[in-house]
Length: 212
Image 1: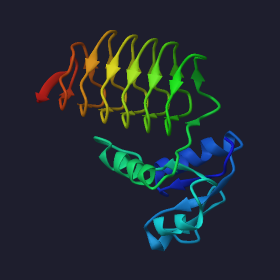
Image 2 (image 1 turned 90 degrees about the vertical axis):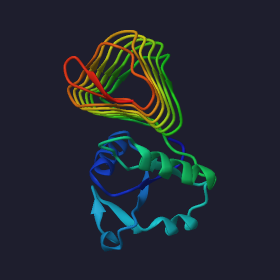
Image 3 (image 1 turned 180 degrees about the horizontal axis):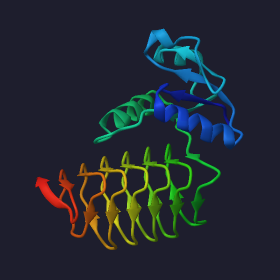
Image 4 (image 1 turned 180 degrees about the vertical axis):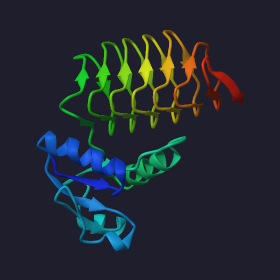
């Protein structure tokens, strides 16, 4: 990481990111959060500097941003925050926890986040602003579209495509060769055996489609 970073958000996911950044010896300038009651507080010794307006003090050429918003459903707010600051000329840092295992030919696009214990196998492409959360496993030749959240403990077998802005819930399993359309929501613990269309919601074992 060639530039210091500023974390957007001071919630639970931000705490996990800060720990990963510190473990990677990143320099963290501070945290910005719109909640003014957090001003001056610290997470792992990193201060909350104020709301988004304080970023005007940090030119885009001098810092990288880290998207500290998590998601429990479709990651729409994560996407909006990312796009807001991209449009303002900022760049987002990729974050990879030191305990993650990422094959040498994996493509990690801008702002992707690979959390503790993740395994990503060869031939895989991880899109921009994607979150691969704790202990998830992504096998060979997968494609994960922009802004998608792969939640903790997910297992994606080989040659899976996950469309942009999707959410794969905690502990879900997707068998090899499956295509999940954009903006899809896979429930926690689901077992996906068939392709899902864009905008789908699927839950259960085996997963059943409850919305198109």
